[in-house]
Image (cartoon, rainbow, N blue to C red; front, side, top):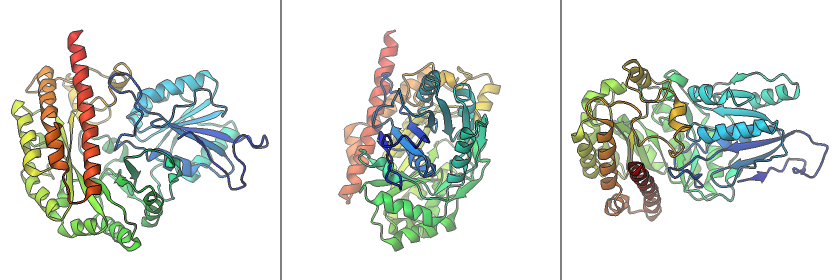
Length: 464
C-alpha cells in the first residue's frame, strides 16, 4: 500500500516543514510473461521484506511506502531518499526504478538477500547496496551516514532478525497468505540453491518471542500464514520450541512452511507441528532420479525414501506440497511421466514445477559454465533482456545432458497440462477443512495461471 506512517508525536508527512527526515520505501513488482506488471502478491514472494524494513526505520524519520503488487510506485516522490528492497524475483524492474530515481537526483539504496544479483545488477545504478537483512541499528547507521554525507558504497549487516516486524504495512491489502519468518539461511549445501553462497551452509534463528509477536499481528488478517524460512527443519529443538509457543498462545492460525523431506522421519515433530496449527509442508524434493542426487548435492535425502516420508506426513494430518526441478543431467523424457505419476500417486496437494535455473554464484551454475553449457552467461540475460518472464523457470537457459532444450520445453508443457488441469486441482485440494481447501484451490489455480501464461508465450514465440 502507498501509505504515510503516523509518528508517535502525531505528526504525519505533509503536516510540518520542521521535519526534513523523510524516506520512501519501495518493494517492486515484476513483469508477467505478457510484459505487464504483476498486481497480485505471489504466494511465496518475499513480501516479508517490507514488514522487516519498515520496522527498522527510526521513529524520528517520516516514512512512506509502496508495495507495488498492490499500488503503483510513486515515480515522482518528494522524499530525497529511496530504499528499494527486492529478493531477486523483481530485480529487473527494480533496476528500472533505480535508474529512474537516480535521474531525478534521489539518493537510492538497494537491499537484497542475494549478493550475486545485487553485485551484477544494482551496484551501478544505486548509491549504495546493503547485504543481509536490515535491523534497527544498521538502518540507523545507514541514515546517519546519509545525513553526514558519508555514505559507503556497500553495507554488510548479517542476519540479525531479533526485533518485531511491522505488519501494519499490509493493512488494506488483499492477501492470499501472510508471510512470516522464524529463521534465515539453511544448513544444507544444495548446488542449485542461492542460499549456500550467501549463508555458507549456516542459519540463524530468531528469538521465539519476536516470532510470536509477529504472529499476534498476523492473526488479525485471518489469512493462511506462510513461513518463508528456507528450511523449517534446520534446528529440530528450535522448531519444537516455536510450535509449543504457538500452541500455548492459542493464536488460532493456520499455517504452512518449507522443509527438507527428512522431517517425514520425525513423528514427534510432525505431531507438534499439527498441534500448533500447521496444515501444509512444502518439501524440497527437486528430483525423482537417484542419479541426480550428486549433481544437486542432495544425497542425504535419498529419493527411494520419499514416498514413505510423505505417507508419514499425511498420517500426521498434514498436507504436502513439493518442488520439482526438470532438465537435470540425468533427466530423460521418462522423468516427466515419473513426476506426473508420483504427484498423483502420493497425493501431493500443491506441486510446484520448474525448469532448472542456473543462478550465478551457485555450484550448478559454475558446473554448467565450466562445461560450456550456458546459453546466457549473465543473470541480466535472464531478467533484463527477457522481460516476458516473471521468474525464468520455464525455459532452459542451458544445454541439457540427455535431451535437447526443445524436448525439455515440450515435455514440461505437457507435464504442466496434466498437473494443472481442473480435475487434478480439485482432487488434490479436497480437505475436511473448508478453510484449507479454499486456500489450496487458490494456490493451485495461481500455479495454473502461470502455466497458461507460459503456454501463451511458447505459442507466441513459435509464430515468430
